Length: 144
Image (cartoon, rainbow, N blue to C red; front, top):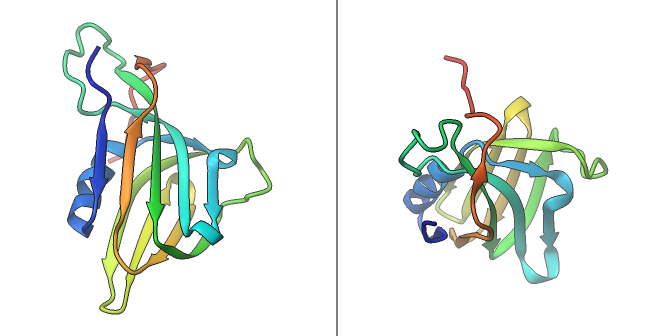
């Protein structure tokens, strides 16, 4: 087994690297949490291990349960994400950070147009793999 992935992001550029590893993570809405008093937004999902080499052993690739949290979050805005549908599964396309000069906006963009917009002063995120990997049912495919 390979070592679990553990990363931190403290700049928009760091978040771009983290985003590339989180692409195609599937997340249940019920596994997202916004703790306003703690200024924390977090979610747990099934991350596709794009960094994994050796496709001959598991040609469909691997997934691993991964947690990510963002601290220092002042406000959360959802677009096309229904918090009441706890079983809804979202597929993360990317994460991006934009510095406005007076703060930072982090966008979590999901397939189908869903977006979670996080407002904060600076990027402060951590990613941790929680489980051992398992064989994916299929390798994610993207339309050109």
